[in-house]
Structure formats: C-alpha cells, structure tokens
Image (tube, rainbow, N blue to C red; front, top):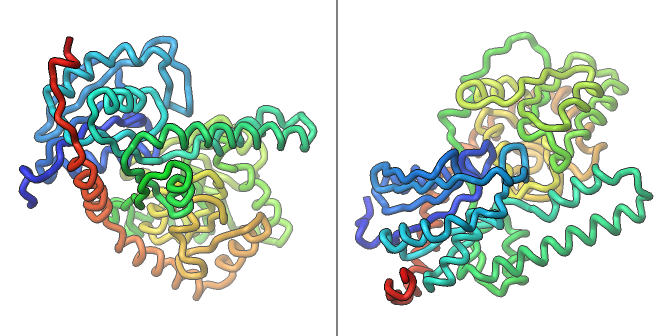
Amino acid sequence: MNNVNNIPRVAFFADSFLEVNGVAMTSKKLIGYAKKNGYPFLCIHAGQKNEITDDGSVKYISLKRSIVSFPMDESLKYDPFFQRHTNLVLRELMKFQPDVLHITGLNDVSIIGSYLAWKLKIPMIGSWHTNLHEFAARRLTRMFRFLPQTSLSKMTGFAERKIMDGAVLYYKMPKIILAPNQELIDRLSKGTKREARLMLRGVDTEMFSPSKRTVKDNIFRLGFVGRLRAEKNVRVLADLEKILIEKGKTNFKFLIIGEGNEREWLEKNLKHAEFTGFLDGEKLAEGYANMDIFVFPSETETFGNVVQEANSSGVPAIVTNQGGPKFIVKHNETGFIAENLEDFAKFTIELMDNTEKFEKMKKSSREFALSQSWDTVFESVYDAYKSVSSQQLTVNRKDFLQ
C-alpha cells in the first residue's frame, strides 16, 4: 500500500452517482479504490436529502435537488437552483482541504465544483464521460423527424456544434482532462489547449463470467444492454431482425435488458424478442452470460462499459464504427466493427453459421476482458491527481469564509 501521506486529497464532484449508468458505476468504482487503499476522498453528489456521512477514508456529501429539477435522462436530473448548496460545500471543502478537485461533467454538481475550484484557486481535473452534443442531436432528430431531411440535418448539426463548442469552453478550466477514447482526447486537447489523458474503464471479471449461463435451449440469443433511448440507436435492432428473417433465420431471439421510451416501439416492431426491463447484480450477469453475441448499434458512446461486460461474459460484440466501443473491440478477434446495417447483418449471420469461429471469438473475448483491471485504470487517474496537486496555491481561509 502506498504511503497515504503522499497521496493527494481529492474532492470529487459526481454528476451521476445514484443513477444507473456507466458514469455512476465508474464513479463508485473510483471511490471504492480510494477506500480500499485508505486514500482521503470527499465525494459530493445529489441524493434524496442533505446528508454528510463517513465511510473509512471517504466522506460523502449528499445534496437534495429541488422540485423544479427536470430530467436529462431516465433518472439523471438537472436542478437550476442547485447552486443554493454552494456555501455548504464550501465549508466542507475548507474542512477537508483538498489538493485537487475532480469534476465529471457539465451538470449541476460539477458546476459547483468548477466555481469553487476557481474561487479557492485549487487545481482541477475534468473527466469527460458523456457526449451530450450527440445525445441532443439524436433526440432532436426523433422529435422533429416530420421536418424535411435537409432542414432537420441543418438544425441538428447546428445544435450539435454549438453544444460541443460550449463543452470545450467549459473544459478549458481543468488543468488536465481525462477522456475514455483517443478521438475525444485529440478533439478536447485541440479545442481546450489542455493536456488530455486516457481514462479507460475496467470490468469485474468475477461478476461477469461465462459460468453464469443458465440457458440450454440452443436458441441463438442476440443481446442488448442499455437505455432504450433514441441516442442508443436501438431501432436498428428491428431492422436487423427483418434482414435475418429475410435470410431464412428463425432459431434466434433478441434478449433486451434495459428501460426507456423506445421500449414500446421495439415491442411492437420486434417479432422475436424478450424484454427483461432493468437488471443489476447477479441477474444482469446471468443475462449477459445467456447471450451469444452482443449487438450494440449506439453511435454516441464515449466508451461502452456494456461491451466490456459482454466480453467478460464470453460474448463477442458487434459495434458501430462511431464512438468509443470501436476502441474496445478487436475486429475479427473479439467481435466486429460495423459500418452500416448490412455489416451488422453480415457479421451476425457469420457467427450464427460458423461454429468454429464463434467459439474461438467467445474465448478471445473473455481473455481480453481478463486483461482490463480497474486498479490499473485508477492508478493512472491518481497519477493525474499528483500532476495537478503540485500546482496548488496557498489559500487563506478567512478570505472565503467571510
């Protein structure tokens, strides 16, 4: 164990924490790593009530959102009056005396963190987890699909560019930016003129394992795990099914895990599908293990935790050539990278028909996942903390507590 006296004291502003998504899961894993090693860590997040709790070396500040909060996603909200908690957080920061602040996005919690980092002159790290600009464009496309295609493309393209420009401006504040794939690193580094480093994500290979499989009916299962939302591009699953049926495939089923406002459409348009709703823990692990291939058509992912969880379960993945998942999949080894719907169909049929290749790819998927360690990921995060904490300036408490 490292000498904790040499470890930076971190104040972590988690925009997503109690929600069910990859960002919240990554945040909890980071906190678990800090606790396991006895590192001083302060986590600020939104919760059901205002509350301060301690758990070993980790302190939590839970802050309640107001009744005027509005949804950003299935469970994630934004509170326009969240800044009312600023003084409370300021007092706790002054007690904790952080060496570095870590923000996780552009939502209400991190906005407080950004302001206090500036006010207290504490160096800041910013991690990029969600492509909000692409999310917005996909949702606008769904909302205004009645418009002529040319007008729709201009509107969504303009919105996407402006949101990205705003995000780049915001991310000029951190000293170092952490991003989950090389495309984002290049884009953010160029736009912000800041140092950008890779922050990958690990996977729990004991939780997600081929040993959790329970089905033995010889039905070929095409799996999907995630929010059933427009930005996940889930309607491609129905298009894929049509092609498979046209090609004479019948002994297959889609196993769809997740909830969202696209579920009703999918239930009406998929003939061979099982919808489990939201699953977690052992039930989720069992669901992954019962899949044969993982079909993930999303084009807006910054990383793709679900792809690694599928791989860990011995399930090859077919992903798009847009976004983070293409950096996880080793084409033709642990899965396939598809350029279009026809590729999704071609690669699916190849694995359905070629048993030898399918079994080899299942084995390779599991072996790759075994090499992805959360500890290695967070060691690199703490290296970034150390880099910026050396830049901390002396703060006169009296200046900010008046």
